[in-house]
Length: 121
Image (cartoon, rainbow, N blue to C red):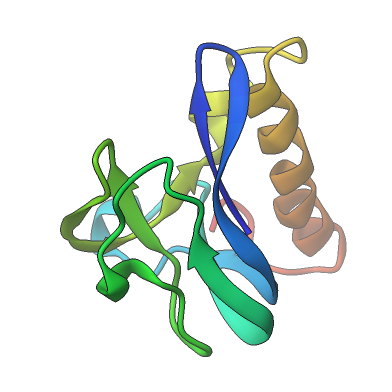
């Protein structure tokens, strides 16, 4: 369900299964940039922390809400949602796992432009 990235390794931080979708960030500070957030559409299997970080219950995803951002130790980041700056991580290149993830998310923007949507979001 959720992972942390440390020293070129993905570590599972939560177990469970949910249907989620990525969408453009609604935050004004992301305007004009290719930044995505992740919305939980439906929880299919109970979500629980693995114990890697001591997450407070308030971080557990809820249907219809955006995923929360956390930092080491499970602390919420000012109540903000998780976000991912596509172009920032694309710059890391195809050999970096975050760069690979960014390449997949970049397709969302590219496909919208091909479909006649707005350029540059």
